[in-house]
Length: 127
Image (cartoon, rainbow, N blue to C red; front, side, top):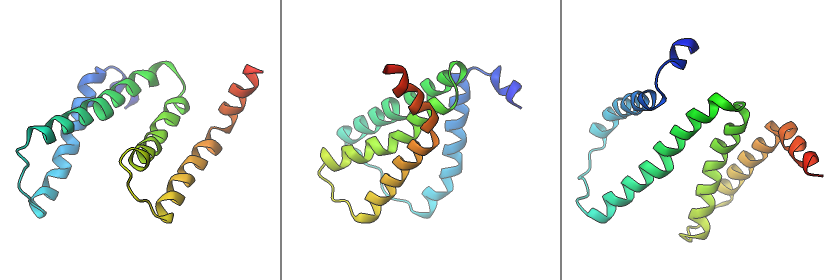
């Protein structure tokens, strides 16, 4: 299966993933239908978030996996929610509760534990 996937263009593969995920989420729309927003401001921000923070990131990660070990982009993928959490907290002044803080600290701890050998080699290389 991996040999078959390796020969597929990464951008086309990303498109297939997006179409399949959209089809899987489509039944949920019919269960909780709500009117669409018609404001341009809203749709520009949705477009910006979708392109810059989702599609572009996954596109780059798919190319990165071809050249570097899978653990290195894994660090970046798992850091993404932590970065989003800190932006929401510091920039948008959202209130967080203890459960959310504990969950994100646990995620950060798991990243450090999983990549301890890699982080240790980077730290000792600089000294």
